[in-house]
Amino acid sequence: MHPIRQRVLIIEDEQDVTDLLARQLAKAEFEAVTAFNGEAGITAAREEKPALIILDLMLPKMSGLEVCRVLKSNDETRHIPIIMLTAKAEEVDRIVGLEFGADDYVTKPFSPREVVLRVQAILRRGDNRPAEKHLSAGDILIDLQRHDVRVAGRAVDLTAIEFKLLSTLLQRRGRVQARDRLLNDVWGYEAAIDTRTVDTHVRRLREKLGKRGDLIETVRGFGYRFRER
Image (cartoon, rainbow, N blue to C red):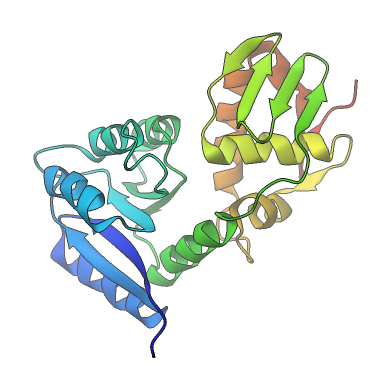
Protein backbone atom coordinates (compact mmCIF):
# COMPACT_ATOMS: atom_id res chain seq x y z
CA MET A 1 0.00 0.00 0.00
CA HIS A 2 1.49 3.32 -1.08
CA PRO A 3 1.74 6.15 1.47
CA ILE A 4 -0.51 9.15 0.91
CA ARG A 5 1.40 11.89 -0.88
CA GLN A 6 1.17 15.46 0.36
CA ARG A 7 -0.44 17.73 -2.22
CA VAL A 8 1.29 20.89 -3.44
CA LEU A 9 -0.64 23.45 -5.49
CA ILE A 10 1.35 25.32 -8.14
CA ILE A 11 -0.26 28.61 -9.24
CA GLU A 12 1.83 29.63 -12.24
CA ASP A 13 0.84 30.71 -15.77
CA GLU A 14 4.01 29.52 -17.53
CA GLN A 15 3.47 25.90 -18.61
CA ASP A 16 7.18 25.03 -18.78
CA VAL A 17 7.79 26.30 -15.23
CA THR A 18 4.75 24.41 -13.96
CA ASP A 19 5.86 21.18 -15.65
CA LEU A 20 9.40 21.53 -14.30
CA LEU A 21 8.20 22.03 -10.73
CA ALA A 22 5.61 19.25 -10.99
CA ARG A 23 8.25 16.75 -12.15
CA GLN A 24 10.64 17.70 -9.35
CA LEU A 25 7.87 17.49 -6.74
CA ALA A 26 6.84 14.06 -8.03
CA LYS A 27 10.43 12.83 -7.62
CA ALA A 28 10.26 13.98 -3.99
CA GLU A 29 7.02 12.00 -3.44
CA PHE A 30 4.62 14.97 -3.59
CA GLU A 31 1.42 15.18 -5.61
CA ALA A 32 1.37 18.35 -7.71
CA VAL A 33 -1.85 20.08 -8.76
CA THR A 34 -1.84 23.17 -10.93
CA ALA A 35 -3.72 26.36 -11.69
CA PHE A 36 -2.79 28.83 -14.42
CA ASN A 37 -4.34 32.06 -13.15
CA GLY A 38 -5.17 33.69 -9.84
CA GLU A 39 -8.90 33.00 -9.79
CA ALA A 40 -8.39 29.33 -10.61
CA GLY A 41 -5.67 29.19 -7.96
CA ILE A 42 -8.01 30.41 -5.21
CA THR A 43 -10.66 27.88 -6.27
CA ALA A 44 -8.10 25.07 -6.33
CA ALA A 45 -6.78 26.03 -2.89
CA ARG A 46 -10.28 25.73 -1.44
CA GLU A 47 -11.18 22.51 -3.25
CA GLU A 48 -7.87 20.61 -3.25
CA LYS A 49 -6.83 21.56 0.30
CA PRO A 50 -3.09 21.37 -0.47
CA ALA A 51 -0.40 21.05 2.18
CA LEU A 52 1.46 23.99 0.56
CA ILE A 53 1.08 26.48 -2.30
CA ILE A 54 3.76 27.66 -4.72
CA LEU A 55 2.52 31.03 -5.99
CA ASP A 56 3.88 33.13 -8.85
CA LEU A 57 3.45 36.87 -8.33
CA MET A 58 3.02 37.66 -12.05
CA LEU A 59 -0.33 36.09 -12.95
CA PRO A 60 -3.14 36.93 -15.41
CA LYS A 61 -6.58 38.07 -14.21
CA MET A 62 -5.45 38.50 -10.60
CA SER A 63 -1.96 39.25 -9.28
CA GLY A 64 -0.16 36.82 -7.02
CA LEU A 65 -0.20 39.43 -4.27
CA GLU A 66 -3.98 39.62 -4.42
CA VAL A 67 -4.21 35.82 -4.43
CA CYS A 68 -1.98 35.72 -1.34
CA ARG A 69 -4.10 38.35 0.40
CA VAL A 70 -7.34 36.47 -0.34
CA LEU A 71 -5.97 33.11 0.77
CA LYS A 72 -4.53 34.48 4.00
CA SER A 73 -7.74 36.32 4.90
CA ASN A 74 -9.96 33.25 4.47
CA ASP A 75 -10.43 30.80 7.36
CA GLU A 76 -10.40 27.82 4.97
CA THR A 77 -7.00 28.63 3.49
CA ARG A 78 -5.13 30.95 5.89
CA HIS A 79 -3.22 28.02 7.44
CA ILE A 80 -1.75 26.84 4.10
CA PRO A 81 1.94 27.81 3.75
CA ILE A 82 2.82 29.83 0.65
CA ILE A 83 6.13 30.05 -1.22
CA MET A 84 6.19 32.97 -3.66
CA LEU A 85 8.01 32.91 -6.99
CA THR A 86 9.30 36.39 -7.82
CA ALA A 87 11.55 38.15 -10.31
CA LYS A 88 14.66 39.76 -8.83
CA ALA A 89 13.29 43.24 -9.57
CA GLU A 90 10.11 42.66 -7.57
CA GLU A 91 11.50 43.36 -4.09
CA VAL A 92 8.62 45.66 -3.10
CA ASP A 93 6.06 43.03 -4.10
CA ARG A 94 8.09 40.40 -2.27
CA ILE A 95 8.01 42.42 0.96
CA VAL A 96 4.27 43.03 0.59
CA GLY A 97 3.75 39.30 0.05
CA LEU A 98 5.63 38.52 3.25
CA GLU A 99 3.48 41.07 5.07
CA PHE A 100 0.36 39.35 3.75
CA GLY A 101 1.58 36.13 5.36
CA ALA A 102 3.61 34.27 2.73
CA ASP A 103 6.14 31.97 4.35
CA ASP A 104 9.02 32.28 1.91
CA TYR A 105 10.05 33.40 -1.56
CA VAL A 106 12.30 32.14 -4.36
CA THR A 107 13.62 34.47 -7.06
CA LYS A 108 13.61 33.56 -10.74
CA PRO A 109 15.50 31.97 -12.34
CA PHE A 110 15.53 29.27 -9.68
CA SER A 111 16.65 25.70 -9.19
CA PRO A 112 13.63 23.33 -9.01
CA ARG A 113 15.58 21.32 -6.46
CA GLU A 114 15.90 24.43 -4.27
CA VAL A 115 12.15 24.97 -4.39
CA VAL A 116 11.50 21.37 -3.33
CA LEU A 117 14.01 21.70 -0.46
CA ARG A 118 12.10 24.75 0.76
CA VAL A 119 8.78 22.93 0.44
CA GLN A 120 10.14 20.05 2.51
CA ALA A 121 11.59 22.38 5.13
CA ILE A 122 8.36 24.33 5.59
CA LEU A 123 6.26 21.18 5.88
CA ARG A 124 8.74 19.62 8.34
CA ARG A 125 8.55 22.54 10.71
CA GLY A 126 4.76 22.81 10.48
CA ASP A 127 4.06 20.38 13.31
CA ASN A 128 6.65 21.79 15.72
CA ARG A 129 5.07 23.32 18.81
CA PRO A 130 7.00 25.32 21.41
CA ALA A 131 7.28 23.79 24.89
CA GLU A 132 7.32 27.16 26.65
CA LYS A 133 4.22 29.33 26.97
CA HIS A 134 5.67 32.84 27.22
CA LEU A 135 8.84 34.76 26.40
CA SER A 136 9.60 38.33 27.41
CA ALA A 137 12.29 40.96 27.15
CA GLY A 138 11.57 44.34 28.69
CA ASP A 139 8.14 45.36 27.38
CA ILE A 140 8.17 42.75 24.58
CA LEU A 141 5.88 39.86 25.51
CA ILE A 142 5.41 36.74 23.37
CA ASP A 143 2.62 34.25 23.99
CA LEU A 144 3.88 31.16 22.16
CA GLN A 145 0.64 29.22 22.35
CA ARG A 146 -1.62 32.05 21.18
CA HIS A 147 0.94 33.23 18.61
CA ASP A 148 0.61 36.72 20.06
CA VAL A 149 3.28 39.44 20.29
CA ARG A 150 2.88 42.67 22.23
CA VAL A 151 5.23 45.62 22.64
CA ALA A 152 4.33 47.91 25.54
CA GLY A 153 0.85 46.40 25.43
CA ARG A 154 0.42 47.05 21.70
CA ALA A 155 -0.35 44.02 19.52
CA VAL A 156 2.18 43.45 16.73
CA ASP A 157 1.01 41.51 13.68
CA LEU A 158 3.77 39.11 12.60
CA THR A 159 3.85 36.46 9.91
CA ALA A 160 4.58 32.87 10.97
CA ILE A 161 8.24 33.18 9.98
CA GLU A 162 8.69 36.56 11.71
CA PHE A 163 7.13 35.11 14.86
CA LYS A 164 9.47 32.12 14.88
CA LEU A 165 12.47 34.32 14.08
CA LEU A 166 11.73 36.69 16.96
CA SER A 167 11.07 33.81 19.36
CA THR A 168 14.32 32.10 18.39
CA LEU A 169 16.41 35.26 18.80
CA LEU A 170 14.79 36.09 22.13
CA GLN A 171 15.26 32.56 23.48
CA ARG A 172 18.97 32.87 22.65
CA ARG A 173 19.39 36.49 23.70
CA GLY A 174 22.96 37.65 24.08
CA ARG A 175 24.27 34.93 21.74
CA VAL A 176 25.18 35.61 18.13
CA GLN A 177 23.12 33.57 15.67
CA ALA A 178 24.77 32.96 12.32
CA ARG A 179 22.58 33.42 9.26
CA ASP A 180 22.98 29.81 8.17
CA ARG A 181 22.02 28.59 11.65
CA LEU A 182 18.89 30.75 11.56
CA LEU A 183 18.06 29.33 8.13
CA ASN A 184 18.30 25.86 9.64
CA ASP A 185 16.45 26.53 12.91
CA VAL A 186 13.75 28.95 11.71
CA TRP A 187 13.22 27.96 8.08
CA GLY A 188 14.34 24.33 8.41
CA TYR A 189 16.91 24.53 5.61
CA GLU A 190 19.80 22.11 6.02
CA ALA A 191 22.06 24.16 3.77
CA ALA A 192 22.61 27.91 3.45
CA ILE A 193 20.50 28.28 0.32
CA ASP A 194 20.20 32.08 0.38
CA THR A 195 21.10 34.03 3.52
CA ARG A 196 19.47 37.16 2.06
CA THR A 197 16.21 35.53 3.14
CA VAL A 198 17.27 36.09 6.76
CA ASP A 199 18.24 39.72 6.13
CA THR A 200 14.88 40.51 4.49
CA HIS A 201 12.89 39.07 7.38
CA VAL A 202 15.03 40.72 10.05
CA ARG A 203 14.53 44.09 8.34
CA ARG A 204 10.75 43.65 8.31
CA LEU A 205 10.73 42.39 11.88
CA ARG A 206 12.67 45.43 13.09
CA GLU A 207 10.24 47.76 11.35
CA LYS A 208 7.25 46.07 12.99
CA LEU A 209 8.84 46.25 16.44
CA GLY A 210 9.35 50.00 16.06
CA LYS A 211 11.81 51.47 18.54
CA ARG A 212 12.37 48.01 20.05
CA GLY A 213 13.70 46.83 16.70
CA ASP A 214 17.17 48.04 17.70
CA LEU A 215 17.28 45.21 20.24
CA ILE A 216 18.09 42.96 17.28
CA GLU A 217 21.73 43.75 16.59
CA THR A 218 23.62 43.03 13.39
CA VAL A 219 26.96 41.37 14.09
CA ARG A 220 28.89 42.19 10.95
CA GLY A 221 30.21 39.17 9.12
CA PHE A 222 28.33 36.70 11.34
CA GLY A 223 24.60 37.25 11.79
CA TYR A 224 22.26 38.65 14.44
CA ARG A 225 21.90 38.86 18.19
CA PHE A 226 19.03 39.88 20.47
CA ARG A 227 20.66 42.38 22.80
CA GLU A 228 20.59 41.78 26.54
CA ARG A 229 19.50 44.86 28.45
